Length: 376
Image (cartoon, rainbow, N blue to C red):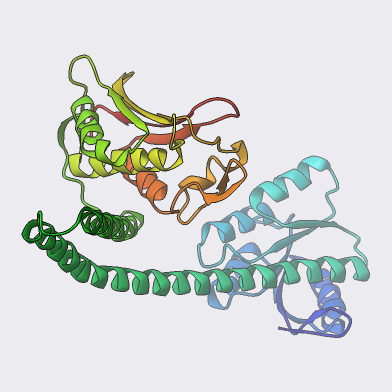
């Protein structure tokens, strides 16, 4: 299909369907004069057969025909996956609103009342052909974009996967260095080794998050589900991360009996660590706090991680859970997350059938929360 200087979609093949030969001849003459190719069908059955044999780019369809009316022809076209995208314009002497409504309900895209004018028919045909062409272009662009994203994700996955081995080696040698040089290095050097190891751990966690996000997005993440006490797990995470709190106060309220859910304990532990780590990063260095709560909720468990850092504007409270979604916090040029940690948390919680969110407003603590169902 080409486009002339006048903006007409010349060369498009149209199927004209009407049980009156005179109407077909007139309509065909009008459209051929506009540069269109036409095929003719004198019945609904003939029209369906013609579409199946060689789909046209548009169908002009009469309603009142014997044996099979235009409504039924259109419904059958739309029920066929291969033909459903063909635009159908109804041509009819019926002018009642109910008839037009039935036409659109059957799947038509436009409705022209007889007797019709050449200019009107051509304008409506041209508009629908242009819309279909733009739709096809969007579909092609979307498919190309999906392929590019697939290639990008594959490349990232390959690179990140290859980073795991050298990072593991670095961590091992740092452990050996800390062990063999215990007491032999000055305090400042010990602190440097500890800082390097902490940075390597962050990199390893980031690598793991990227790989697991990729698996969860593609549906290839297998969960090792078992009975998991959310309260006990929260207390364990708070204890393990207390050394990272510095001058901030990290506490956990996990009193009461066990709160059991069917979950992957290792994955859930990483969710908690990500949320606590994120909260510690933004709680003020002096006077800041992070409070981890875990308890029962209707049908399952609820965990919250509260901190007194900068608030998150309401318009960004969903964006921060998107992959690489970063916003500034409290007007400070500092992203509220790495763009992966919270995305990992969202995918991991949803993989368990749960939900996650954040509550934040000016002058009040920021609270990240997630809920998990008791069953798998």
